[in-house]
Amino acid sequence: MDFFSALNVSATGLAAERTRVDIAASNLANAESTHGPDGQVYRRRDPVMAAMPFEQQLGSMDHNSQPVGVQVVEVREDQSGGKRVYSPGHPDADPQGFVTLPDVDPIHEVVNLVSAQRGYDANATAIETLKTMAQRALDITK
Image 1 (cartoon, one colour):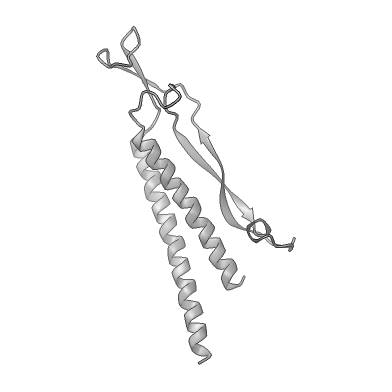
Image 2: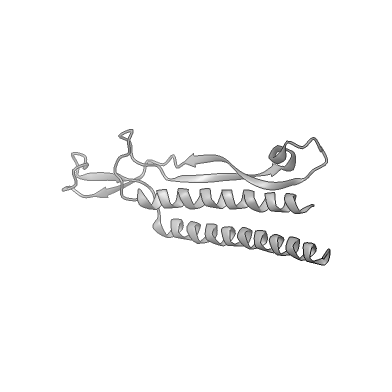
């Protein structure tokens, strides 16, 4: 694997981890939302990632390449009905006094954020290491 291929692998990882952070932050921000722009209860979202063959990344015609990158292929919405909480004074309460809230667990979302941060840091470190290696290779030629 050459320098630019390795750099591209880490770049796809950075982009995927950024998407994970964005989605987890959105889930946390809407944990108490009783309805979204469509009038329905906000649905928790999760990114689905998959290995991306190298030729898809750079348009290469090499069919012997192995999956080396990652991409977010889908963002799935939670299909549960949400959680019902008894709150008769809430403006969105039904006639029985229950409010339907998104099924978002703040602890789960914080764990997702920490995991995404660690993945992002690992990819940033790999890019920094590649940069240092390239600089040392150039210094050797002097």
